Image (cartoon, rainbow, N blue to C red):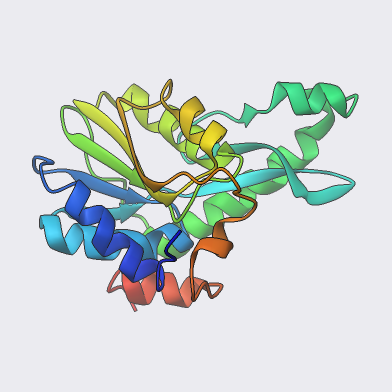
Length: 208
């Protein structure tokens, strides 16, 4: 299966699939989703902003996500995984609090005191650079839904097949360019998949 050259290439390809969107608001999940969303917003002449999310990690191995939280939303947990670990959401309350603090810090860095764009009655497209477990995307979609968008779309270049299927219950439309059977990491589907910094995000948004 052909690789994306980089996130900008992936975003340009996604923009082709999204060209029928009507005056959408693009909400990118930092950091990687911003690089994908910029060419989409440019192609659609759309409003672009960030929707900040944070993974909730397993305390003994923080890279293992047991949930996620998005700004304006409640934590969303992988209850099945927590159960297999012999834990409940209460057992990660300290982690949730720490991630809320980091989430608030990033909101201030990326957007300052500005609120999110008005989403009620608008077509909203949530963009990330890929779906592995889908935890952060799920938290983002559930945070946006109460704002009353006319249509809520999740757009990603690549995602694990089962995760993509599970997102169909969270969004009105899921747009994914690749959903390979042998998915094991988002980065494997990009020729260049550099880690992005806060400064990179601000530069992409034209705020640096």
